[in-house]
Amino acid sequence: MSTETKLSSTDLRGLLTSFWDESLEIESTPKGLLFTMPASYPDGWQVVLELSQKTPRGFRLSDRGKTLSWLTGQGQNIETDAMKQHLQRFCVENFLKEEHGVLYRWLEWPLDATDIHVFAEGLVAISRLEILNDHRAAEEEVADSTVQRIFSDAGLSPKRKHQLHITKERKVSVDYFVQQRRPVALQILRTKTDFSGTMEKWGFRWKGLKENYPGLVPVMLYDRDTQIIDPYSRHIGETECELFCGYDETDRIHEKLASIR
Image (cartoon, rainbow, N blue to C red; front, side, top):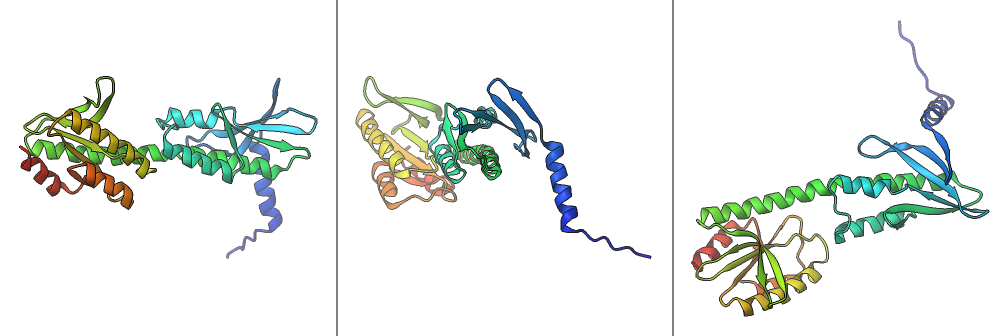
């Protein structure tokens, strides 16, 4: 004997609205209303919004700084160029603004629940940027471990984060530095955006360092899988460096180190 279960649109509507009703909490505060949304940050905590009436018909909806502070707490640097671009895109797509770490949006009376829902969706999307921290850290760890292994195989012990003088007053830090017959300064290109701007800066730095350290061998490495180097940036790298290649091109790096010992 079998029974058939039919789900009607009324049943489904009742199921979803009951979930919304059970998860909704509203609290009055001196500033306005705090309320929960049926949405969560990656750690499982519900999104809590604040709605404050600022004018007879104007309301300010905000996250009270929760989203960006949560990202920072996960180790994500929200001040990098890449993060700023991601944040700007999500803010535009979800009609958000940012001020002193607080994400907010202005609403007018009569309020539209869709605007509140889109705002919460934007907060959750921004909070998911925490995954970039793990990916970037993993990528940089692979690059650094590869470089360290290359130096070890070559019998060299480089200094890490070593500071070199461009002028008496101006210094620059390089990822790896080896003092030998011809000193080697090795830098891993870590930016994910604005390659041309970053390479222009390093082009000027290499010029100054080569003038101050006769015989200096500049080496710059990048990730061929995730960093697409434009022709202008590549020209700077290949002109100002004695070796500009992917960190996984270990044979080329070994050959360069062997040729200058």
